[in-house]
View (cartoon, rainbow, N blue to C red):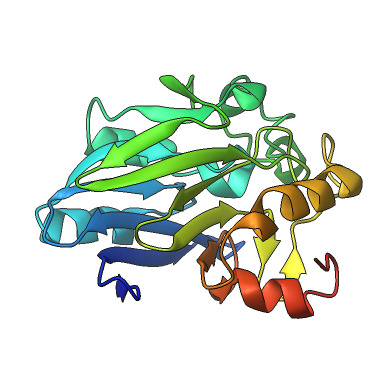
Length: 220
């Protein structure tokens, strides 16, 4: 889908709901561009891969919001489809890709080991995709290395499992913290403009303004 904002900036954010946990993975492309990012890579990513190939896009990176199993299970297939594509992840979870206990796949009986990341995502890091500028913000709580990606020009934020439409990410996993997550939401996400469109790791999109007013778990 193409998402224009009030300034006329357009960006294609194509969601793919993948795997048994219905994880939202995204292909992000500036209007008229061919370079794209892949945001998270869940189970059975073939539909997402086919979309990229069909449109003739060039994936420049896989950006991981965090490294729980449902956001990384398709990494091997995506890496195979696009050789050399770098995988970027917050340093707090660099060991998780290859560790089934940390990425929670051990409990499923099908351990996931996806090798090592190729680079680091850090709080305040600036990224560029085509003409658009993005900033990485560290949003721990659901997991210690959770991050979100914010583009002020387009008025969009891809937030992983920190904030959902009417809910928040689970905090009953090892390494999770409800207090830390609430702090991340108030200190980082709720500081964005109310009109910012939020694309979460599960469920439908929302806006910052809507969640500040009505989210039952974390009020502004």
